[in-house]
Length: 268
Picture 1 (cartoon, rainbow, N blue to C red):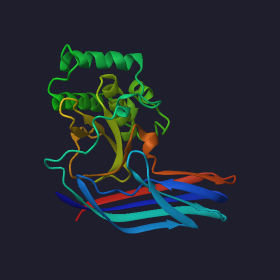
Picture 2 (cartoon, rainbow, N blue to C red):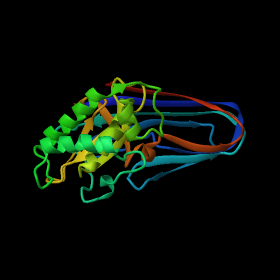
Picture 3 (tube, rainbow, N blue to C red):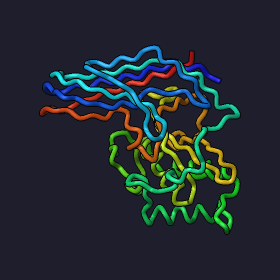
Picture 4 (tube, one colour):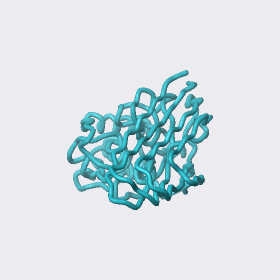
């Protein structure tokens, strides 16, 4: 078990005044089977009203609005996480089928399907069952890790798994999308997870995969070539990154936005 202190800070500056700013934030971790969360600070500025809810995946979110003119927007969330994945698994409904279908961001190109078919011959039985599930997933993760190069600024939030696989470059979102796309093509349920990680200066993304024989979920980080451990705090999950956008909003005005995000995670 680790006791982690975390801070999430986001500041947006607009080139001119805006108004009618509505926003949805998914930046607050929730307690679950592997982490117990205590939020000690939640600040949003400026804001006229704010409320909260939970999406269809169980992720908590904050939504609100600022109608008056403003040229900046800031969020700060601070808290503590008691994280213990020792002998514990992520709790998800393995009977759900939505995590098996591709999305616009996680489809497989013919080259990816050929890549996965070669992998299938090594790790799957003739009836389509993976041999030594955890070993197979670790091997797939390592292949993705060694195939791709971590390059910030090369991809965008709209970059697909196909594009990242072909270009062999990207960030954590792209590594996760590539692994999810290959897993789903292989018939393995796979979930996109966004959160925080010790040592990271920004938010992070990783993957959970389901062993169909046991119904157990395993969290794996293809960007860092490792199983997820107590250094990770999950914030949201879904089919792909579109379900886990931390700050989503609309506003009225002719302005450009510059945004700075800082995540601090340190052991107590």
